Image 1 (cartoon, one colour):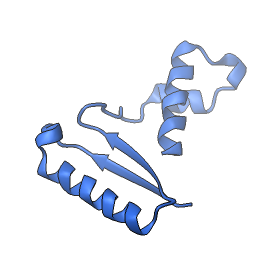
Image 2 (image 1 turned 180 degrees about the vertical axis):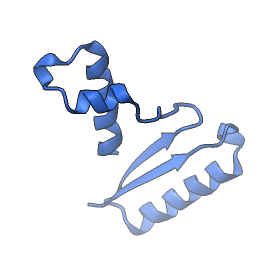
Image 3 (image 1 turned 30 degrees about the vertical axis):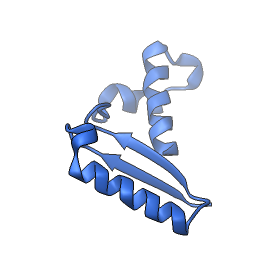
Length: 83
């Protein structure tokens, strides 16, 4: 099984030509590759924060010392890596 990550960034959402093109591409790709898992990430409506010191610090802190903020930062990082 292959994976396809489609990242969109248009503020026009459903009225976006580029989003329509990506949707068409995904449809055509899936026709030829039906086992592909598709993930979509819309960075215009759900921004991905820049890597910062708090996140890097969480990477190097043992899990038993993670506070709620570190857990949230690492959860987002894990989600993005999985995509």
